[in-house]
Length: 149
Image (cartoon, rainbow, N blue to C red; front, side, top):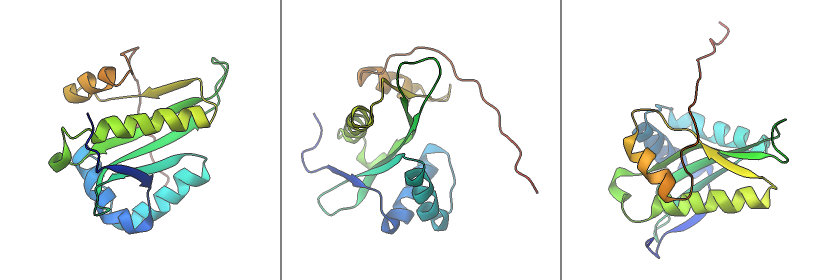
């Protein structure tokens, strides 16, 4: 059962340091100075960036969502593009609340499916997502695209 003192809100520029620290825990080192523009880009692309906060409004977790129209489904698909709970806040239901917020967001945006990918090394996530109603359905294949110089 999630901790009742935790609530969800939209990510704000003032959360940049906390979000950068959370993303670092996930294995994505992002300078905190880039967070506000990245959040803005997600929002301008009709996505969402939400934080789970404690009663002092300190971020305990973050989730980023996107929505894609595809040929193979009767409606758009929502994707969890990042989800992380602070190591100090785990086992308090923060992740569950973030996934529930993603489900609500997906419904509100007319999506017919909610998907997430997880690296092979993330055994904890492989147990977590099915427990939240997101069963294993396949594999992800990807490559980095070199940025122009």
